[in-house]
Image 1 (cartoon, helix red, strand yellow):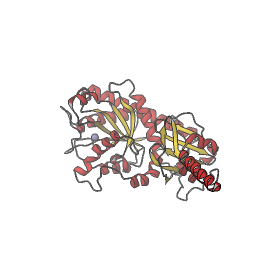
Image 2: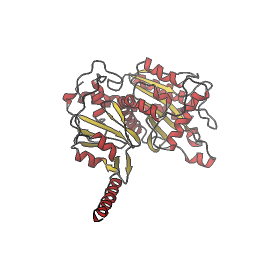
Image 3: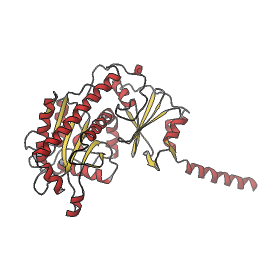
Image 4: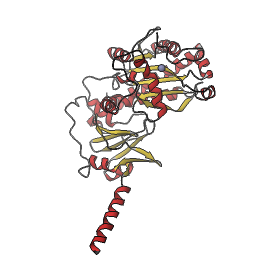
Length: 385
Ligand SMILES: [Zn+2]
């Protein structure tokens, strides 16, 4: 009888401790496994870098990637009270042998860039250890994101029968085309090779835009848009600001809604394989490929934030977001979708309609492209390329 009581007490204690250890602090996990921990606040991603192996996580995304391939997690990492938490069962699975050993790279990992890209923090990120240069060998064929930045693809959103969002006195398609053309001029002055998915008022399907960018073998894809909300006039006056988006799982309902609005074009005009949202399995399939360009997309995003500092249109929230924009899905290069401002906001609409504003916006984007180019160049130098 006494044994039984002890047994029950022990079970209760074990159950309680299992419950309590359901979530574990990622920094604690790093310490326990002698890995270094790197946090990238803008990207909301973090690395656990051990000897020869680096695990990359993203807040809110139930996947972990290592050496360019992704594995599913039971639970997405989360932030609670300033701590980054992982599910203990996921941690146990990832660190099966006490300390994680370097897995041999999958055979399809012939592109050594990928290892460097996955395990090396962006040069603009928080101070972090640069992995031994010896693991980086010169790749045979450098691809977008790792080579010098030369070809920029500008994608003015919408066009033709698709007006995009409509303001009181203007259409999104016209504002983004005007900015796009000015941006082309600015970038050509800087010596870039510039391509535009459209340079007149024509309709182009979302999928075709990325195809064109791939055909041109671009180094950076910039899709230009204007934001809008459907709300009361009072609310329309309040909601304003620019936002730079990269392709990644959305973290807020607002970001999700913006992607849905931009993606609607495809379903509206009967584009093949059109959909307004990516399913979790589609995200999973995309993850390894995204991994290759995500870091550079964020590098460019950071340059955009710097370039737009002091501009008339201010950041909306943090100014950076992620969502499933279909126009970015097919692009095999670093890519962003830039929501210049809110066409539904009377003040921002009036401003964006002026040539002076369009010139200022184009000049700021061009500046961001130039500083991004320099950052990529410096990054390559640190890798000895
Ligand atoms: Zn748009």
